[in-house]
Length: 115
Length: 114
Image 1 (spheres, one colour):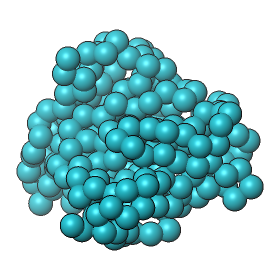
Image 2 (cartoon, rainbow over the protein chains, first blue to last red):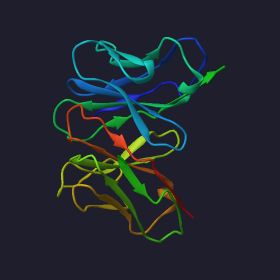
Image 3 (tube, each protein chain N blue to C red):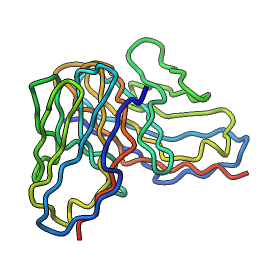
Image 4 (cartoon, each protein chain N blue to C red):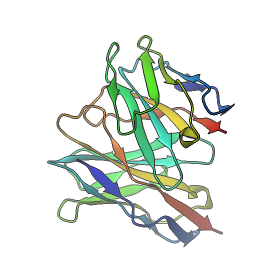
């Protein structure tokens, strides 16, 4: 079985400060890891993914994520938050073998960036 | 380029009524999915279709049926709606069923069952 935990329901940061949204995962073997963002009344949009190689992955809108195999984590980061980053963020995992199509999502973290 | 289109956007049903959610994608993707989103529970996979002509159950398939009508279209049917099926439903598609393929989501269909 595979699972994702996003330990914080809510993250609040001030505009201009760095932000981190946490994600840990459990999967058999090696993982593919994803971050998606959902703005109000919209579908999810892809931000970035980890496949293999460099542990620091860069994605859209200045976001990046760091893969840590020993801690089974894939935290989303941004050096300087914008009010427009306020949204619901989902981490997802898929194992690299078998189980075609079955991505498992975390419960989501609401990010609020205050001016 | 519309991406993934879902209809209807909103629907209110009475317990026991049936309805079909429609989904179409124009990206020539092979795989399509139906998820439901409930507060505090993330997204849960209902059914998916790895390729045209195949469908498989996800985490929460009970009370639902699907049809992969052709490569573009994947519909979700509630035969006898229950209040527990009140949710926001998302259709998604990807180039392939496995690997590091990225999901492209529709805007969602909000369903209320009274």
